[in-house]
Image (cartoon, rainbow, N blue to C red; front, side, top):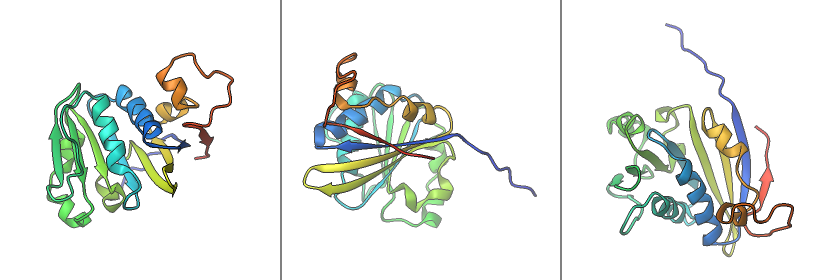
Length: 187
């Protein structure tokens, strides 16, 4: 039996966050683009800001109430503009994850946000948005964004240059802005 190999377009950029507001602005950008079946694969060390990103994403989807990491429940479902399937696979193996039926969520009518996604690479759809948060000291973070396939590569290619531009259309054009700066990457 032959395996099919797909070559999906990949686009990468790194978002420099100087605090929670910048991280929330990036989360809002992606939430505004989300549609049924959107997959976000979120990684980073403990304390890097995965849950803060998830909270900002959920808020931008219109989720009401407390959103926290589903570390011990594995999957939490929230209602907003789209259903949000918030998963935390930190405490399980790839084999254990296979028994959870994650593909039903991935192919569902909502958005799947998977914390610690690198633990289950073989279960994730090939086309997805990969986000890796790196703590740079204090409130600083670099969020490495990789869009794989459609529409994710286009989302990264169109990622605004700053948090200011995302919250105030037309603002910041041609200005030097420290908050939410982007560093271009290569795929």
